[in-house]
Length: 339
Image (cartoon, rainbow, N blue to C red; front, side, top):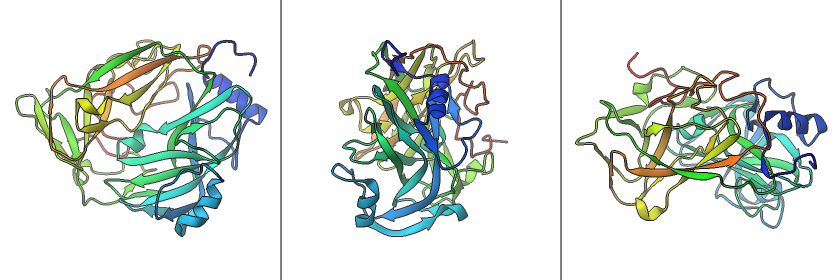
């Protein structure tokens, strides 16, 4: 990848080039909408294992470690329910053979985070989750841990996405993200004993069966330990076309909660150029050990902006999006609240 002089996130045309060069391959043909403006959606393959514990394969391959901790195997070609409170490892269809100077980082897709499915990428001999070292040559896997809802998945389901980068991109700026608790409905809390969410069924679930609306009092919400919440950012989020961003949790000393499983924002999100002006960030919030009173306009996360190596040939929403121009919005699996 010597053509890239400055460090940065690779745009879609560079990801397409890596696919054409064989640096990213797949067990099946790539989907037409799989390459996003600055990321690549990853797809489940046919095999998945229920495991007794999560792990990092620091001294071996993921497959060897699965053999040590697997409880039973599931066939995803037939579809399978992954039960909440359990941990699974699944093969991904994509395989990497990264060129020198190119590394990668994965994050849950927004739709995964919004149904409280905790996912992390694993690579052979990896000593961290989600990060793929420069020049990595091998298979990739995904750890899946549904927290609130049991979910139905199958081969081809997309739960996470991969961002490829050259060198160590500069942090252009960091912006604080605060929460909006002014609406008549300020957010939603997941129902603990709901049914199964089919992660490939868009607009296919009645939200009332899975979510409880939250009515704020005096601009405040009380977060209960162990519960999962969907809230919205106070201000609009905008990702310029030559940049990408990742939402990161705030310092835990600011509050006893974690925000935002899904961290990638592609270039063009919330911009006028991509017809998304005014889009808000949707926040996935889980309270920890103690009850916590969240106040309107309280800072809950940080948005870290990084440069692209060049302008992407398409922007967020060009291939269609469920989340451009969003306000407070549940995942794409649910019908619009109140309809």
